[in-house]
Length: 295
Image (cartoon, rainbow, N blue to C red; front, side):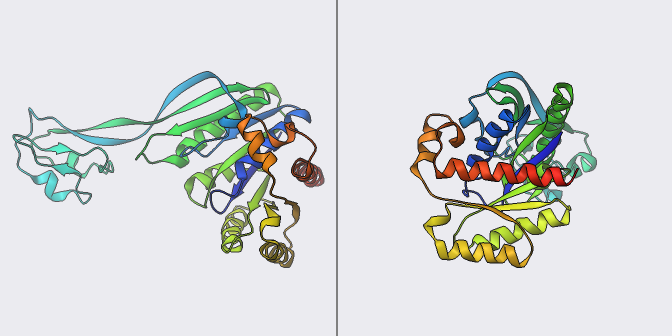
């Protein structure tokens, strides 16, 4: 079983479009399990039309709760809170749940023992069935933290399912950027496909995510999406990669067929044999070739 993670240095490069197509191709090449690791704004489900089979709350971290019956309104908690999360009331203080960081300083310093720390439900994870195989995805609630922990949980569930099903592939649609959820999505992967775009910041964004995968020693391939909208920038990305020995496995053209496929809820490789589908199939062939060499 091989784990392939699709990443980009920023959002909007077409990462999920590519991930959905690779999930389709992986399901045709064997059995596949999919992970949408963008828990802050998951959208792989828009293409895969998942049928939810299992779901559960995700709890991570605690927040302060003030018992008004015990609070003496001494103001000690508000004085110490560096996040301005404790607000005065008419008879007792109260906690702004969105501002509370769960540090528990107020809990330890309250002279009346009026504060308790309660575990907070921060999101929800799902196991679904799709036409390509199982999909594990999640939703982090607005304002909540620990997205990296939620991504790790979803990946663990996917890994367990892949072992039970003897799956050949785990396809992981990672978060954009280089933060904690990206690290959680990429750690332990066998290969990373980095989706770049030919914009002014294209090389900068690619360089950021390359430094991340290199740090965690994850072999990486690059594809340039919508390459023909700015050929000069696309050449810069290709030359940048060539100078660093990073394989560029495809230059995917811009085509309205991608939008049309998304509207129909399909991967672009399900919709025909145009240039976009052909380039993505070439990406899949190169991924398999590279992983076969590593065996």
